[in-house]
Image (tube, rainbow, N blue to C red):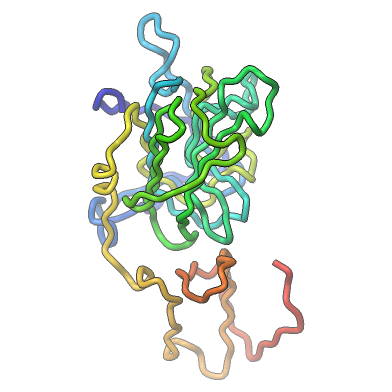
Amino acid sequence: VVNGKAQTLDGELVGEVRLNVPGPREDVYPDFDKQNSAALFQGRTGYIRIADPKGEGDAKDSVLDFRKGDSITIEAWVSAHGINDNQQIYIIGKGRTGGSGAMAVNQNWALRLRGVGGAAGVSFLFRGDGKQADSEANWHRWTSEAKIYPGRGWHHVAVTYTFGKGDSVRGYIDGKPVTGTWDMGGKTDAGPVVDDDEIWIGSSLGGSPNSTFLGSIDEVAVYRTVLSPKRIAERFEKIPGEEDKGNTPLVDAASLPDGKVRVEIVEGIPSDRSWVFPMPRETEQFELPSFAFAGMPSK
């Protein structure tokens, strides 16, 4: 979005990406229609690639190139199915694709999820434009303290930032401001590295499985301005359900089979010392005549 006008760019599907899967819909998210669809990423090699659009006239920079002094807002709706601790999965980013002729350290900007304790923080990343040899000090990563839990439906995430003003970063989850911290090279007033590399949705680093999103993404948008907290708050509306009460759902005893044990395998339980958390959906369910633990797996 430039000067209030939206531009839609064509993308190419690469690998395991499915379009027209159910996205956020009006029965739970009233701002969407009943047929709204999204893109599903399988968490291995799938992503959407978008060529860097040409600048206008003699301008070298495209509308998606950001330099020191430029402001950016990145937003998206995400439904993450899973994430490992310390894994960094991409929602959208420019650069760092690993393509022919492109530097491996050319991250102009990126919005990601970062795995923390079985949950996912919203993360903003760029590489500074310093000329020294690449090191962690050149990378600047901000991650929210608030988290979203995989398997708990759709969430709206957003980050705003003005390059060159380290204190300007703001993060949002489901329309609400969230605090966060800088690490790696820390907060900086440096600008980002800029080139003509592609924009990828759902992955980076040549499609590395460790950076590939597992789940669905919808309504991705990049703005050349800082959206106000009020405008971002208006993005998220949800009809509350049982999962919003914050407690582990109780099993309906009437649904259990007589004379058998139902086993549910659930991934992504947070490491907090508490049973008060939103329960992710089971990844496996089966029934047995009896069940016992002979040992506990380390996972």
